[in-house]
Image (tube, rainbow, N blue to C red; front, top):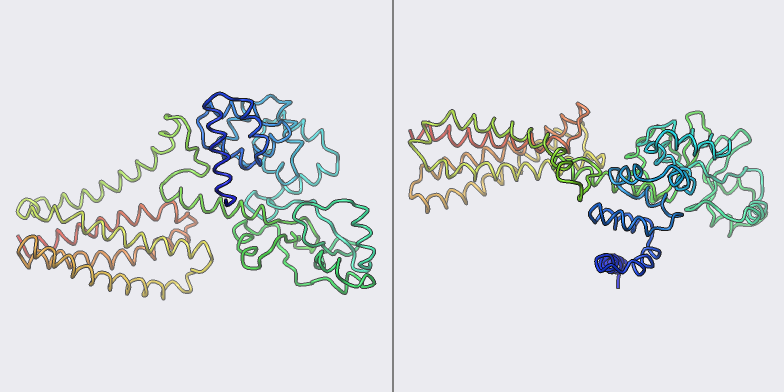
Amino acid sequence: MSNESLKDTRLAALREALQTGTLRQAQRMVSTLHPAEIALLLESMPRRQRELVWELIDPELEGDVLIELNENIRQEFIQEMEAEELVAAAESLELDDLADLIGDLPEAVTRQVLRSMDQRDRERLRNVLAWPEDSAGGLMNTDTVSVRPDVSLEVVLRYLRMRGELPERTDSLFVVDRHDRYLGSISLARIITGDPEDLVGESLDPDAARIEPTTSAHEVAELFQDRDLVSAAVVSPQGQLLGRVTVDDVVDVIREEAEHSVLSMAGLQDEEDLFAGVVTSTRRRLLWLGVNLVTAFIAAAVVKNFEGTIEKVAVLAALMPIVASMGGIAGTQTVTLIIRGLALGQVQWSNARWLLLKEIAVGGLNGLIWATVVGAIAVFWFDTWMIATILAAAMAINLLAAAAVGVLVPLALRRLDIDPALSAGVILTTFTDVIGFATLLGLGAIFLV
């Protein structure tokens, strides 16, 4: 059985135990789950059941579970927890996770957590909080292991044995000079297998990845993906080692970006709670539905201008959805590819002209193919070549327009610092509806009335 199937089986068994009221069995099951699995379980059940499961969680794991929860659900639990419970949960976290949580804590709890930390950890936490959350500085963990270039590998091995343990996901040590300036890294494999008499400076990799703290989380994720990194040093513009970013944080960034793209295209907020209350969910969706209503009225206004044409050639009303739907789907395909290209850094203004011409050519070819198909169907359906020709022409024009809009709108939105995933779909639909209706009805007014 795969890990995914095993996890699904365990979660299903736990839900069944909760439903049948066997809380002792449920508690034993919860104790075997990873904090991320507990968070998934909490996110996949209504609020009343969440509160029941929360009571079954080992207090030592509460902080780790809070970090894994989506923001809305996390805030609900924080509001219900006692101050002492929150302090205990926060104190159990690693520094980079604490930096993610501390902004959600009540001010009094934050002060208490800071008082409980020693001066060194407080300073390290301030260094992380000094940077935006979606930057390398905000992602980094200051718990690093560094060595000097003028010591031997044998000395480093003795130091590691004395230290006893390493920070999680440590695949290499960072090499710094006596002023803490970053020189490169040396892999643990090299330390273990190299000649013990070799100096660290002779074995380090001076070209190891280094990231400035202001680098966006998205760029960090791209770097890890392109270079298959497990960890990378965060280095100040002056060359000083500040901390490190590890792959577990990058995976979170990639997941959040994927969720953002999917939810934004539907006009939903990030961290949307599937089991939120009716009023809360309604309020969150009102604005986007209102925007869509405005665009629908714009398309309706175009149709209204052709009332006379529709009255005389009522068959055009039946054909309008076909033209609009085909344009919308073709445009959505193009928009999705362009937004993905923008996210991966493959699309810039420098290659936009080539992409525009290519997508117009694709739209034109698809337009000709499907115009021929729908024209033939229209001849069979209505027994008239005129309506078939008008329908085919309208579809071809709309697919061409959809291709152009699908390329230009995301690029224009990105230039205006507006998230294309959030707005491009609505703008595209408006364009394809208006162009499709206007073309079909306009041609009908010219040739049929």
